[in-house]
Length: 314
Image: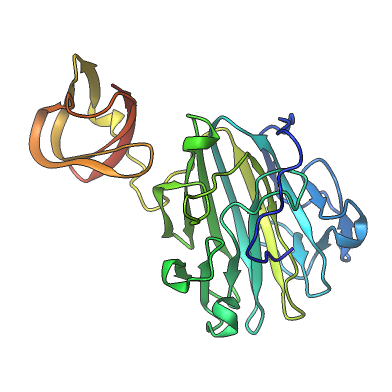
């Protein structure tokens, strides 16, 4: 359901459900635009009338996908009300020419309690003035200057990746998002709206795939949800671990070592703010972090062109 710019009052405590990681290739469904309601797919009002549809009109892998058409249906992908840990969601989308798409992230599996990051539109945002290849996240504000704007293709499948970092709980949660391989939301971005002060997610509840207009037509396939990050799809399959990278913290000093040249080091706090950045060009480096507050930091390194990150606690 498309969000008006307010949050529904929180009426209950967060209850953590047992939804685990899953994959769905949509091939077990009946096709013929039959509604799908199961342990993964729900609907806004809990009835088949608003559930996602099983379609054979498009598919990425196999012969079936699931569809949100322009009939006003309001399905949700259930993500388990997660309040801790690392979670990655990846799915493929297909939107035909002349059609639009829409989704949002809910802070509870029971929809309507909290829209976390606002409206995510594919070709219909900014009061209808975007062209059909432009998408945006409005962050629950009416100020378009702070929107995250991106492009996406039509008439072909493209991937959407969302990584959610709840390792320090929801009050310090962050997330990242990529569409068709392009970064839309940078790693370390607060998993929250852009109110002043921001309102963080009460949990990772569900993905709402609302039929926002009569010209909505979006297909989903190859859905994967797991208890770890997918990460930037553009990074090399090589890992920094394969370069012999090691890190250690002692008395406020971070020591970094590798078997190959460490080109650069950047350190971020859990709000996504960069607190250190340096070119190293050595296999060994030390960083004096004694002036930084105690807490958890993300250390990003580039080792001979291979990028990766580790978490350190000071």
